[in-house]
Image (cartoon, rainbow, N blue to C red; front, side, top):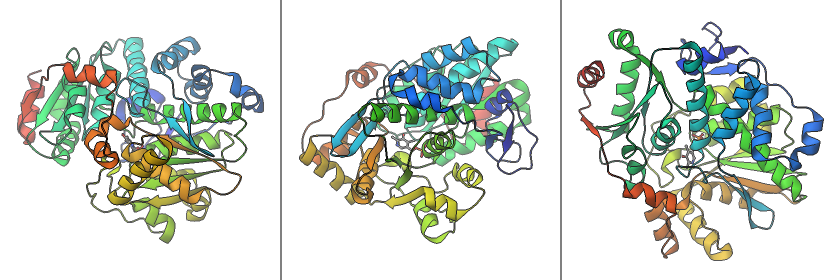
Amino acid sequence: MKYYSTNKQAADATLEEAVVKGLAADKGLFMPYEIKRLPESFFDEIQDLSFQEIAYRVADAFFGEDVPADTLKQLVYDTLSFDAPVVQVKENIYALELFHGPTLAFKDVGGRFMARLLGYFIRKEGKQKVNVLVATSGDTGSAVANGFLGVEGIHVYVLYPKGKVSEIQEKQFTTLGQNITAIEVEGTFDDCQALVKNAFMDEELNRHMQLTSANSINVARFLPQAFYYFYAYAQLKKMGKADEVVVCVPSGNFGNITAGLFGKHMGLPLKRFIAANNRNDIFYQYLQTAEYCPRPSVATIANAMDVGNPSNFARVLDLYGGSHERIAAEISGATYTDEQIREAIQQTYQETGYLLDPHGACGYRALTEQLQPGETGVFLETAHPAKFLQTVVNAIGATVQIPEKLQAFMKGTKQTVPMSKDFADFKAYLLSE
Ligand SMILES: *Cc1c(COP(=O)(O)O)cnc(C)c1O
């Protein structure tokens, strides 16, 4: 299938070009030319299919023309080596738990799929080694690094701001070794991002090594997120709760919710969506005013949603022909302060015993406030609460069990390459690699 750019000023790309380039030449985001509807018969039997079987049917609709069936099946089955259960929190409200993967956050799905798809393209063409550069403020680095760990022909450089990510997050990408190098930058997340952007634009560096990005805008990270919307629906259908499903997505860069919107365009019978924001509520304001006004992000306790100019807004606009009316008919918004997020974690824990993470807390709270009679709400629990240990412990005033997977990371030894924020230093380092 061909991909076009949301800015419509760049040439069409093949899947392989879109995956390797990440961003189109005109800085737009790649969109598939066709969003295929899945047949009624699929939805009739979906409740009897496994997560992997469902995901393969969805993957086939997007990637089936470009990847042989048995290879694609293998990629999907390898990616989804863990479950994504729907768990009841209270009457009519369910959590879709997306934290059962290796780094305990939903980004594992996209990270693992992209690594495997890129690995396939490299093997197929006998390409030279590909180097992935990724800047992270926390979760992206761990999901990408763990997704690519041990994939042949690919080396990953994770750039992160020294002293500005939590210890648990840092351990998840600095202790891996093998084909993963963590670069500890004397600067902020923005400095890390600037180093990566400069590297992509530097001709000498690009002649020296094949560089690619694993940013969340990449179609190979973004589209696979549709898998679990279908699986959530299947589980609700099995419970007899699938008639009027409202999906609430804690949103930052809007990649996750956009994948859900794609699912609906493929025929998934979801009633409507809610996008839950923290104080970085650019999308919420857009819904109210029809004006899109990006602004610098502010730090919150739901930090993976601290985005001041959500990249995937371009995809949402494109999907609905730029119509605010159509977007507002499909998605409603919500916005919460840190205080309201803490309150949601505390109250939910007290009332139901369910422990929310700060991102899921936004999603849960929005459902409790906006669900109509007869509707069933499901919110995406995007990360395990123990990843935000201090915040949740403070909110509930009790200790929190740290899952074994997280503890295992904590035992590893941190290994990093120290780096200044000067591009000249970073370039010299890469040229010597
Ligand atoms: C990345 C992330 C989000 C935001 O997802 P987007 O696709 O950027 O909207 C929400 N919660 C967690 C835990 C995340 O890591």
